[in-house]
Amino acid sequence: MAAGAFTSVLLAAGPAVAATVNIHDASHVLDVTRVQNEAATLPDPVDIYTTTRFADDKGAFDHETQSKVSSPTIIVIAINTQSHHLAIRAGTKSRVTQSAALAATRSFTNSYRGSPDYTAATISALDSIRAAIRNGPDSGARQARPATAHSSGGSVIGGLICLLLVVLVVVAVVLVARRSRR
Image 1 (cartoon, one colour):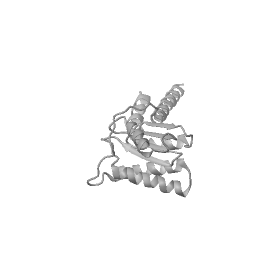
Image 2: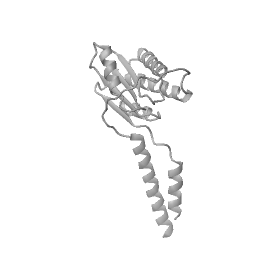
Image 3: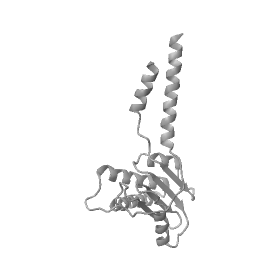
Image 4: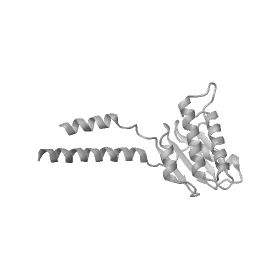
């Protein structure tokens, strides 16, 4: 009985489920775990791509990035590691405005220029997006461009970790309850 009440309190007081994050690191330049953990703290789902496709055509690269915006709230970050071009796009109901996406792009660029580390630069862009969301939308700012295409599915690492922690706590409570009965 006490174990059930304890579990209910833990579930009610537990952290919110993290945003869905999909990382498609075709260029193999990211510390996927670090980037995943940072992106999962955003309230909107995030898809991150690294590629060398369309290195000679920024317009086509930007169009391809826009085509990855598959839901109204998604944030898509695409990095061309050959041309060093970055595109950030968001759905129509995302909390990321166009000016926030531009600020995140500048943050990425400044970080990468200081040290050519795609992981650090991507985390810098995510931090910029997080700050913009926390501070609210700019007055008169438009949302980053909407889109309609589908992207591949992914995992919710943060949610799985939370679920695993809850299961471990429940098992521990059950073991303690059994020992106290003896």
